[in-house]
Image (cartoon, rainbow, N blue to C red; front, side, top):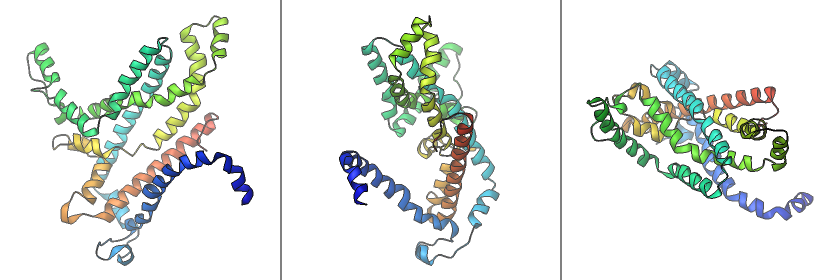
Length: 305
């Protein structure tokens, strides 16, 4: 034990730096796991977890048999897969394009502009979307009337338009910030590789194809695995804010369904049912990250474990 601490003493600043995030994760991620037991109980607030009766897998079966199950599962998976396919390549392409720009001042300006949407709160962003795409007073309505002479349909009331609004607004908000890790990975590309490729007659596109992309591919694979592990974790806040009675059949996802069952039903809140759904959600995410990690490890040499 003494030898263990002696080896780590020179790096005490690094361990001190890790202390705050470690405490945060333990407090807000691991300690609350003790409450997952209510998913297997008929939880009663007055009786508490120790006094509530056990019901086994009743709430899991209840969710799987619920008439909303197929709809909320399909909505969650379809929108998240759509978002992954549409949004995942953008930060990579943007980082590669930005890395090819020679002007440092222009590069910093573009980075700053593209990072800014990430720091807009979700409430403000959804409010901006509602203003822009308002068919009567928004830019969308003004352009439509100017071009076609008619008031367009309400996109926020359309079930077919909802997934596109949700996904592409997310791409706009996040792609600049998500590109940071790829820009950092590209800085690790050795200039000697580019020099050797230039001597061999490679143009800029060929150098991107055969030098830059292979270098950042391990980072891409790791980020893809992590994204697969969040496939069921569709953000509650944005979904709930964009939701209305007209698009409910498409906007009702697992996150909003959990909220309505657990906290949004007034006196009939069902904490056990909501906890069981959340646990099911986490289980699917775990299966997905293990599956994608296994495939990545068998196809290539990069994986989380």
